[in-house]
Length: 276
Length: 270
Image (cartoon, rainbow over all chains, first blue to last red; front, top):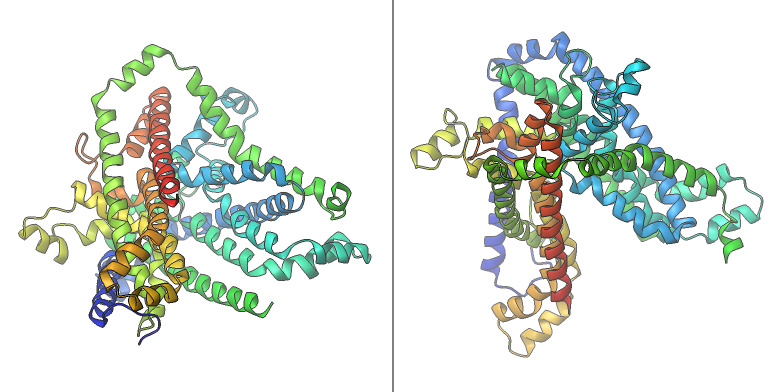
């Protein structure tokens, strides 16, 4: 059992037990409760709640939002990390401050800023109304708000990795006649791939589950702007507990899969670092 | 050096994409917030800031976020210490579980916490019979805030504990220091900056938290109504100015708290 230890064994045993107890009460119990409530009326009750059309349409909407947001995020993350680590050392500090913003702003405020911009009395409100474009209370608003809260995930993961990689190998590739795409796919990408996947997993989980920012801009229009988390809220407020928790199990399982996958990825990343 | 930098491709492309995305998703919306807030009349600001409900909501959000962040520092340490220093059965499971709150959607956490501590559930009923009211009380809000913040508290301290050179501890022990001296005089000063950082992250997350809190809070004005919820209800009543003022108030208080935490950290390092 001993790995690194100067402290008395009683202390070690005590703190391990407390750690298990804390994680049990704070994290495991709430997660267990999702499943307990979902199966309150047995498996058939659970299954009936799952095959509901509104639930499936909210799931479809969440998947669409997720796919778009993750794509935007990956492109931005690659571009921003490439620019600040390869060319823009001077604006690096600025970018890092900007990337802190979405984490330090309340999700409700994140949704609010898009209402101020695109809402009917917002800056662009009358212009949008004239040109018949609906952003708030429609899919684009949901995507914008979700993108805002997830924007830093991929970039923040890639910046330190691209720093560590350095530029010598990339420059060598270019000097030897490789084009930009070949340099990127054969030199840059293999070294940053685990970090990239890690960022994408975090972004996927957050974009599927974003609630605060989306509730502000969504308007709760069924079938159009009600994502999974909003659907869960609606069912819960209508006292449809089994249905609400059944939907929650889908997101719960997805979250668990993301967490396990993330740990496997960081292990692979550590192995790669050790080899190089 | 300059020409060397330009050897690599993609300068204009990556700059273009970064600027476009940053402006579209971050700078223009945030700019709209600041422009809009500059247009609000002083009388409106005074009117909103003199509302007791706003200050009550801020007191609840910031006060309870402070408590939950403190709680998370303590719990975060007890979780990070064994993960960093020992190997024991179930360690990998424990390590995995800690990241779950990061991936679990806040609304899901919210409804499960609310039903876990509801007075008709086992745990909630038991606590209530012991005189502890969790649902619809400030304690419930603290529990929800701690749930979403705990991964930050663990993951900032854990790598720092891993880095501690066991040789220093052994040297101190050889020189006759007992374990509590080693802990308080050597280990604690080394990990204090990371404890503060974990406090800051956990606090920032808790102050703005919405989804996991609203279900368990009951949202009673002056008692369990958090500031983000008040912003949302102002937006729903089309009181945009009121929502903006409250948002700016929240941002400035958060900024002050995080600045204090940062400065304390810097001071301690010296």
